[in-house]
Picture 1 (cartoon, rainbow, N blue to C red):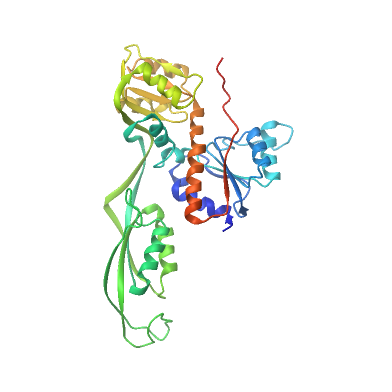
Picture 2: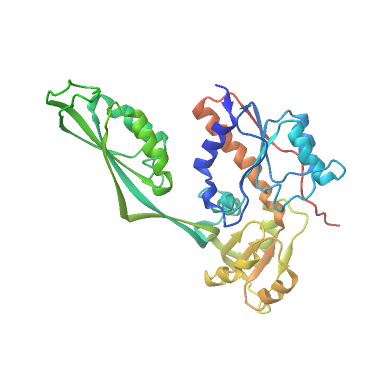
Length: 373
C-alpha cells in the first residue's frame, strides 16, 4: 500500500523515539511536510549540497539523516550561498528532511551497538546512563470472542515487548456481569436487563512512554461502550538507556593489532591515536562512542576500558587523556556513515512486514570532509 510520510515516521519513532535524544538536540522534522505520500526514501549521514543533488536526481520524497541539517539558527535563506541554497532546493523539490541524532546513538540496536558488532565487542553495556523508563501493566476485560483481536491490537501498539520477546500477554477467562441503563447503547444486552458475558482478562506490560498509544489502541479495539480496564505502575521492571557502549573482545590483543582492526573495520585511510605514557600493550575491554564523545573519556576510564574509541578529540583534551593510562583512538566522525546501510536494511525489513509500496535508498554521496595524504 502507498504510504504517508507521517506513517513511516510513526514507525520510525517506535524504534528510535525522539524523547531519547539529549536535551537541546534538534531531532525531528527539519524541512518540508510529512503529510504527503512518499514513494522514495533515502538515508544519509549528513545533508550537504551534493546529497541534495543526489536526492533530486533520484526523485526522493523523504530524506532521513543522522545529523540535523539545521543545527544552528539560519539567519538568511538565500540562494546566493551554497549552504542555504540547498535548503531552498529541498523545499522547491518537496523533499522532506527528518533527523535522528543522539537518539540513534542511545537506542538499543542502534549505532553504537553496530560499532561493537563490527569490531567483535560483546557482553556490552551502555557507557553513560541517560534515561530510565518505568514499565506499566494494562489489564483489560473483553468478550472472549474479541480477545485475539485485542491482543493483536495491543501488540501492534508496542505492548508486550520483553527483552527478546514480542507480543507477550497473559489471559484468564471468567464471567463479566453488568446491567445497562436506559441511557446506554450496549454492544451486548438490553437496557435495564442484567447481563453476563464470558470474558477474557488480558494483561500486557508496556513502557510508560507508550501509554497513550497502548490505551488508544485498546479503546479502538474494544467492542464495549464503557470498557473496564486498569493500568498499574510496576516497580520491579524498568528499562535503562545510555549513550556509548563498553564491552570486551573474545581475546586480548596487542594495541597495534587492535588499531589496525579499527582501521580495517571502518575502511579508514588513517586515524589518530593517543598513546598513554605508560603504554598499554594489550587490549581486552573496549569503550566506544560515535561522533564527538571526548567528554565521556573519564567514564571510559571508570568502566576500566583499555581503549576508548571516539571522534573529534580536541588537542588539549588529548593531553589529559594521555596521562590516564588508557589508549584513545580517534577514527573520525565519519565512521557514523555505517548507519546508512544498517538503517536501510531495517527499513526494508519493516517494508516486508507491513507490505509497504515504497523504495529505500542508501545515499552514495560521501560527506567526509577529510582526506589523508
